[in-house]
Structures are given as structure tokens and as C-alpha cells.
Image (cartoon, rainbow, N blue to C red; front, side):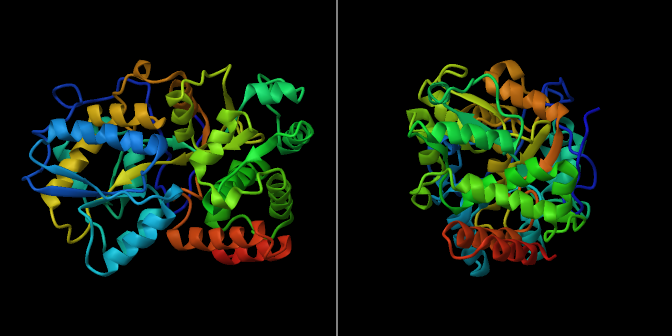
Length: 429
């Protein structure tokens, strides 16, 4: 058994994904098709923030499977641009409050869903798990994660890892660094960043605020360790403590190694800096791997990846999922979409394009890239810790407050002490 870290309020039990196992299945082998779901015709508006890069590629792959499985339902792309969904979530909340929901919308599995549940804005879709055979092909502990008071409110399309560094081997070698020997911790990484800086390249590329929060969460993981990091969200770790102060100091130092135009970039542009060789490192979730692959950048020679230094042995967990909103104009169309999202064909097509790994246990690892196979192995063996930036660790209100505090800090509007106080207040400490 692997080691598991759980978050109170996120999971009633440990998270286990036997992604490389044979798993159970439906009578015909665990597959669902057009006969398994709803869909009485008409249009289905699918609301996401997948508007560019590998995210858009994944959505288009899923749309193609949907067209095959449910040809009587017309797919309407409701994507709103903006990495991590900040703009999309704001627009979605406006629409939900106005009684104008899309037919289905993307949300991160975990604490992010509690806001919608508490507001009575999404339906219990647990009946679809039986209808589509998902209880046989999703790991029970993943189902436990999704279950709130005996109800399930979304169908996950994938599993992602957040704490990944992407690096350009050529830039590292020019700085006298060995791409095959990642730094062991944040302090060692800082020394490597200094070596890169001396060559004139950008040591660490980053983008707008949400990507900075993403970087922040991985620094907290690395410096605090899994148990103390989990404690930030359960109340067991003091946000005002010296250990957190030290981690925030490291974050401040890392921001000093980043590109000055960061607030004008989203994640694809920041990742592209590594691909182009203008930056050495980028911290991003493993959806970034598709950006390298679609440009035919070879793993090992054109890029290398490793856990954020100090977080080796941890798997920063997040999962995309889809819901059935209360008052959806075409609930049968939404059910049809959820059928495709949970189907074997849908999950294979989507995850091959997006760089994530399937939530189903019956997907064949051999169908996926070398990186994805390594992610499947890591998920099966590492300690699972929830992502802050991507909805697994905290409700949206907490993330929004953390994002505001981070933006003020990285733009110079607050000092480190003020930053720490605002983070503590955001988390309710």
C-alpha cells in the first residue's frame, strides 16, 4: 500500500488510483457508449476554461468522442479563456445566480465543489454512476472523495499532478548543470537558478497570478512536507508559524528569479519560454507535457521534468470533473455529455491529448506517453497532497483570498509579513 495524506472535509478515505491495474468493468468490458446515457437531442452547452493549448486539444478530443457516442446532441463550446478558470468561474457564478446555468460546467473535484453544493446549484448525479457502470471502473476511494453526504455531484475526466518542474536541458548545460541530476531541495535549486541567471537566460518562467499561486503551493509542499502542508487546510498547521515564514521567504526568492513580464502571460506562454530556450525552468501541472509533445520536443533531450525540489515523493493532486447544474436547459444532453466524460473512449482520448491520466482503472497505460506512464506510477506510490490553486485543498473563497494576497505581494503592494498575515486570514487561522 502506498502512503496517503488526507484532508478533512476533502476525503472521507484515502485516495487510491489503480490506473495501471485491470480493474472491474461493465459486462462488456467496462466501456460505455451511446446506449448508456441520456440525450434526447438538442444542444448541450459545455462550459469550461479550456480555450487554448493542450486543454483545448483535450476538449476537442472529447468532443469528437461525444459526436460519435451521441450524434443526436449538438455540442456547444462554452469555453472562457483564462488559465485555472479565474475568469470562467466569475462568469459562471454570475450566470448561476441569475438562473442562467449552462447545461454542464467544469469544476475541480474536491473542496471547490462545496460552494456549489452549499448554494444548491448542482444536482446529485450518483444515479448516473450506476447507469454508466462507473462504480465498477472508478476506484472506490476516488468515489469516496467525490461523495458528500451520500451524494456525488460530478464525473471526473482525469487526474493531474501539480508539483512538476519542466526544464530545458540545453539551457541547464550552458549553466554548467546536469539535466539528469535535479536539485534535492529548494536551497539547492536556488543555487542552480543563480547559475542560470549568470548566463543571461531567465532562470524560472512564471505567468499571471494563478500560476504564481501554483508556484506558492509547491514551495509550501516542499518546505513543510506533506503532513504540515495538509495541516494548512485542516487547521493543524499555524499559518503564522516560523516554518511558514521560511517557506514564504523561499517563495519570495524564487519570484526574484522570474521574468518581469509575468503578469501579462498565461501558462502556455510561460511554458513556451522553456520550449524556446529563453528560460531554464517552469513549474506547472502535467497538462504542460502536451505543449512539449505537440511541438515534437523530445523528453530527455528537449525537456526534462521532475518533482519540485523537496517535494519528491508527493503527488500534488487535482482532477477536472463535470456537473449537472440545477435548472440546466437540457439535462438529458448534460447526462449524455457526462456519459462520454466517464466512458473509456472519452477518458483515453481526452487524457492522451491533455497530458493527464484517466480516472478509470481499465485504461491501458501502454496507450499513453512515457511521461503519463510515469505519472500513473507516481500516483500509485507517492503521498497524495491536494492542490490549492486547482480546487482540491480549499473552497473558492479561500483560493480567491490567497490569490489576492499573492498578487499584492508579487507586485510589491505588500511586504512578507503582510503577505503572511493575509494568507492566515484567508485560511481562517
